[in-house]
Amino acid sequence: MQNISKEEFIRFLIDEGALRFGNFKLKSGLFSPFFINLGDISSGAALHYVGSAIAQRVKEDFDGADILYGPPYKGITLVSAAAIAYEQLFHQKIYTCYSRKEAKTHGEAGMFVGRLPRREDRVVVVDDVLTTGGTKVEAIRLLEETFDVCVSGVIVTVDRRIREADSGLGEYALSSVITLPDMIAYLQAKNDEHARLLIDFYEGKYNG
Image (cartoon, rainbow, N blue to C red; front, side, top):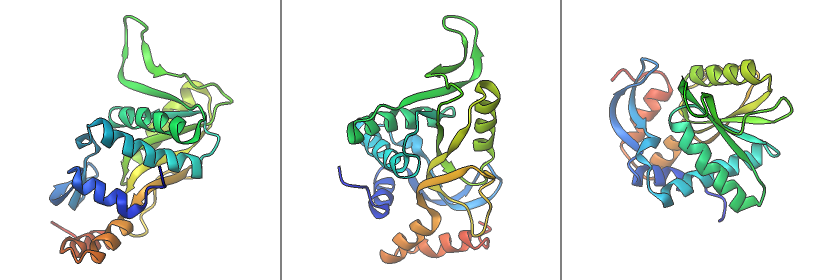
């Protein structure tokens, strides 16, 4: 598979209904003229496509990573798809790990499932979108405090931060398949009326 371009990935999100336009209230409290829901991507072919896009980011920005960690719940599907695609594309093994929201008290028990990180492992957190970085920092702290491991960074499918907004990740590296300016450029090239609303959001001028 050739590298997936930003334009191709945006078109894919629209076709799959994972990128929708309207007026939405985000978890951060901001109102947004668009919404990204990776949970709408559910077919085998679509998940493989997303996994391939993430795998490309792993290879280019975190080459040599050992484990992909997925925060519950959408991150779980994303790391699974990415690990499969990574081995198919690059013929290199990479492991997955995810956590439950509550520790299991029967069977294998515990909070974590998959390959448990060791101190020497290079771990990358994978999630759907980033607005403020708060949930990503929680995931990083959970991993570092539990396993005494150093997290290499974070990959998201969409970085939807407004202009000059801090990622909230501090020294941790951030990689994304696409950004909000990428989406704006795509819509402008298509003469799509939603481009103006996304520009307002990016400039911090959108109020619903």
